View 1 (cartoon, rainbow, N blue to C red):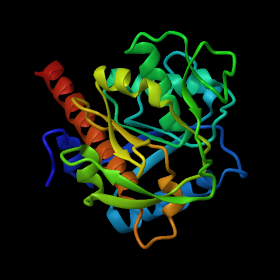
View 2 (view 1 turned 180 degrees about the vertical axis):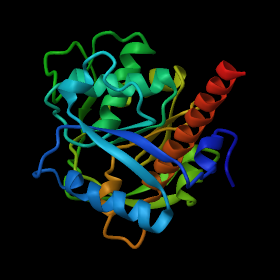
View 3 (view 1 turned 30 degrees about the horizontal axis):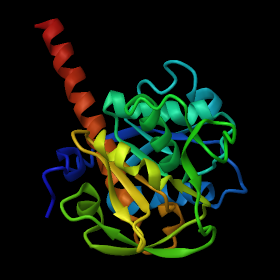
Length: 263
């Protein structure tokens, strides 16, 4: 059952709409998740009726003012260290403050944490240890054990958006990362409203979300790597549904505004 934190945009599926989605990341043949995206988009269209008009936006472009305006959703893909960290941080900020559906995976999860720490928690020196080793306050730090190429269990918090998306309380996911959230910052981030709704067996943060947002979800694991399954990973399907709902709302609002002009 959907919780009170689950937004209507994640629950409704207006299949007749097409959503413009920004794929923020520095596209590379060396990143397995990037190579899976075209197949994921085809599966969403052919099996689920979810049509995404997706555009790759390199991180240097994403850092430019207004570059992400007009997109119905933002997907911050793996690839850290990004060519331009500011672009990754801006993608998370734009989606959060503009109430645009957002999915962050792997590096996208990490930079959503950096953005929130800086702009909501007031930790202006918050940094990513891999990207900014000289930063005074690392909110993203090396994991005790690298997860590159590993699968591991994730426990999903009851009553969360993540629970609605997964439909289970425990899942096994694929990783390709060596950095995660600093345990010393979790309480500060939670107190400011960031919800860590999925954790590993030791309590390490693996899924985050925001309440009172149409759809804001990020995972340290890479759901893109599950594209060999019969269906697209539920995290990506839920994101696509939220993106299309956003597109439908925007289209309805535009038509209403035009009707008012000619009335």
